[in-house]
Image 1 (tube, rainbow, N blue to C red):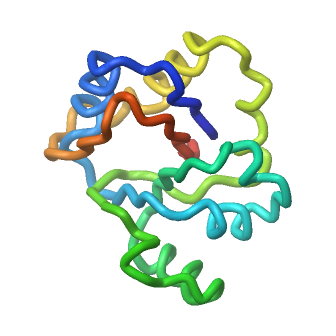
Image 2: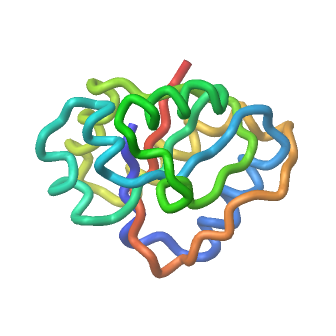
Length: 140
């Protein structure tokens, strides 16, 4: 799923960090070209308006496979990663959230999707609150 971070506050980022702490998979921030090719969505960059995306993956092997396939594996492509417990998104999941108009609906979807990670703990994301980001996350 894609979440629009256009208007998120530092308080909301704090909630996300608390929910995501203590988990077992990894969070990768990667370039839009990789996401676009992975999802096979030609206008994906336009939808993200030039911003980077965050991908949740089960393990590094999955991500390495994608980068090797696209010849995009450089230090610039992976901005940072932490442990989380999730998998790659599907094309259908990625497009569904574009229908959401309300920022509150996006926030609610994000928090609901991540609730199951509440019991785990790891020090993670330090994302600048004023930056507009897109979060891609898949459900199991």
